[in-house]
Amino acid sequence: MTMIFGVPVQALMGQLLVGLINGSFYALLSLGLAVIFGLLRVINFAHGAQYMLGAFAALLLLTVGGINYWLALLLAPVIVGVFAALVEKTMLSRLYKLDPLYGLLFTFGLALAIEGTFRYFFGASGKPYAPPAQLTGAVNLGFMFLPIYRGWVVVASLAVCIAVWLLIEKTKLGAYLRAATENPTLVQAFGVNVPLLLTLTYALGAGLAGFAGVLAAPVYQVSPLMGSNLIIIVFAVVVVGGMGSILGAIVTGYMLGVVEGLTKVFYPEASNIVIFVIMAIVLILRPAGLFGKDA
Image 1: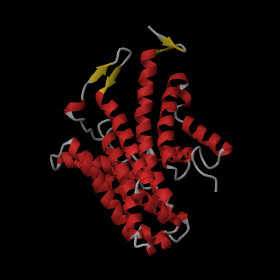
Image 2: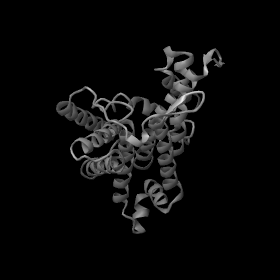
Image 3: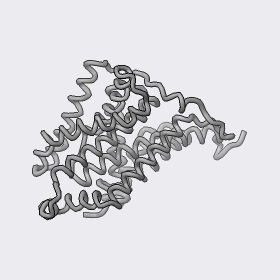
Image 4: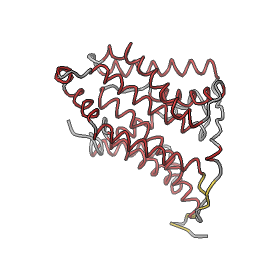
């Protein structure tokens, strides 16, 4: 049996895959957080609840409407995005001119309300969601068996992350969004509907969380608590990458997922805290984050 640093290759590659899968969810969720914070200056503590809403939307679309995984992958993020847009338009938008703490407290309360509602109707136990038939089984790579669905999660996550980065950094809409955060009055003077842009931005960030929730549904069980178990780690990822940095959210999401996976191989006792240790070190050496800009 081939060994690397005293660890069987198959075990090492298996944990690398686990790290990449976790990193895929970290990247998608931290990207949504970075988009919202970077453009709205709102720390969206409801992001974990929106991730959970995406998973439940896929589950309910299947059980109630008979809608399969592929269609749910398109519809669930839209449903979560529309819900987020309504929240932003009716409540969150009233807090933009106040201290950012009010936005954090509001989204934290919103997350508790959403999770409490779903726990009341669905209970705290998880519910299974089967992957589509086209993505079942595994591929033999020689040194390990790669589950097809887990490979799909990594590819789909990476594709969406790159598409969002291109949208914000390379398109006219992205330029409007960035300009609206710097000088909304001037942008509105040019005929751009800034409030609508901000609503769409919040909906986009929430939709990314919903998309991650649909991807996660066949990997983890669909549970009202699935978002609260993940959101603290995702906040740590965003801090390491740099608050508001789109590229930082993507790169550090995958990077920290892989580091976490490797830690489970070489030092399992530290696997639950390694991301927070890295966050503390980064904050000491570079408070703005790896990709953030100093104030």
